Image (cartoon, rainbow, N blue to C red; front, side, top):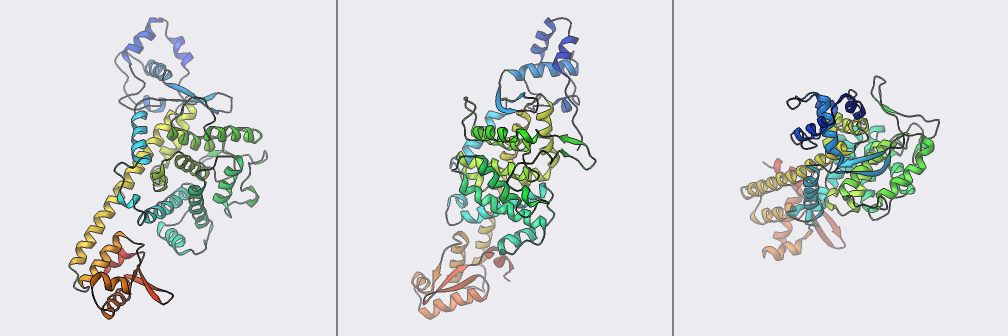
Length: 443
């Protein structure tokens, strides 16, 4: 990734304009803070053709002036003490409205998410996906297949990468339990300890601020530094301000909860208070904030897979905000788009799974290997994976004798479609976890 071109100082452009009336002309020519609906950084703007009669620098001045009016300050300050700001430009209001409807309410929510019998399948799947991709963003190297096998079977991690993924998974589960707690230094440290357990070169660095002698910076493999965080001596006061912001104590004005969660993500990443694990902790705090403010669908939404597909865009959103007068609008717009895509992908995934289940049910009806009673039970189990069946309940449902019911269920067990456990004197049958795959493999 390359360093973006720094915008020219507005004071220089003003000096170049000899006639004050020229500024009014610029504002009449450029009437909004975006270019074709895009909030362009100078690094991108110089690749576009300016409006007739304007230079790129004049075009930039007009855009910046239009961006000043819808702007508000946040309590995050850069290393020089200047406040970060954010402009509520289009399409931010529309994207926030979509999040309000699609992640906080229950309008058109898929049945698989609202149904207690099936929601856990998607909850665990989302946690695993987020754990894997969030860790891969920070350098974990392993395949999804191996990582999923480790988490689902409960085996111990074999290396640091697997430990990172397991930590991330366990932390995300913990976030769901912590969403009603106020953010504090102790809670941030707990999240960091969970995230970095047995993955740091210095184990004592887990759950504490980096020290003055632990100088860190963010850069690339060529030694180019992209970000030097605030000094270690200021971290405690900065974290105190971050927690006050996360808890809604500051500022006095209303900030939409989704924007507050995004800024919280940026804030911890900007301060980089830990020796390692800052990115994973920042994303965990984003989820904590979204769940705390009632966006319950984010228990099932995973943003890191989208970040991982184009990590340069993710990191550049940070740099754009830092290099253009501490303008958080770039990061907010980028993150809102990621959230929109993540919610859409969840809906698309559930739709695909629904079609798949319907196809399996249709295939079941044509399976001569199973009788109609067995096909009905498997069809029911596809939609109610936690349902328990007994020989007696099966007998009553199908009005058959005990031996027929027993034979049917044991045959399903032998085919690997259900598993049997004994509760006292009663045999209980439940569908296997990979029922869909087992059905697809039937001849």
